[in-house]
Length: 259
Image 1 (cartoon, rainbow, N blue to C red):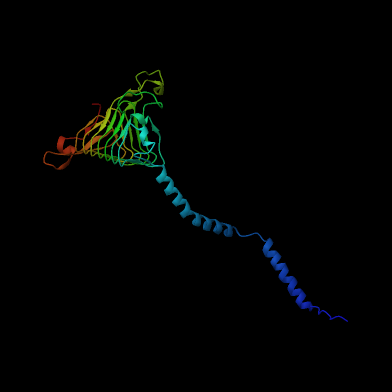
Image 2: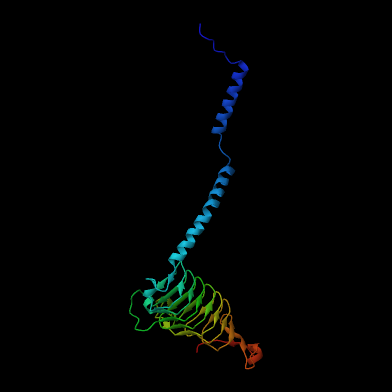
């Protein structure tokens, strides 16, 4: 006779069945939403360094620097100058001149003229000097002449234009009326605060501060502070080299108007 196989005791069979039911129940039971949430958090945390590294490489590769193919499209593009990536709209580069060691922030629009490749003449329409810094999201929109002097710094989201819509005809929609152009100049060493608007005909002197959110047109002398809507001279440098309020110098703040 062959060797007999021992049968498990009833209690052992019952315990094995219980363990099997528990394992099947654990596999089939739905997972808690917290489990999936934690997985997503861990996955995102692990991917972030790679995404940030890739973005830094992309912004470095995407910026326009002197000597690059994109820089050669400009009338002049100075040594040490860069336009940061992501780029804003660049239109009419043949009529845009940017000096040496200037920095144009990301998402900044610089345009000359209405449409691409339209002949605007032999000279640049938009001239940006040496050492200029334009903050992110800013707009410089030229049709006649915009001249930004050396070492002008701006905050983000400023707007400079030499063109406005006309509104002389009361029966024609303003957007369809012929625009009016007036040249704009910003003197060397000036500071244009965040969100300021420089309108056609503005002639800003040297080392002028334009306060954030101001709307400026007309003549502004050297060494003063302009603030408000419309812009007013609120402080200026007097003959003694002291900064004084415009009221103490001239009796009242000077409202800027057409030159």
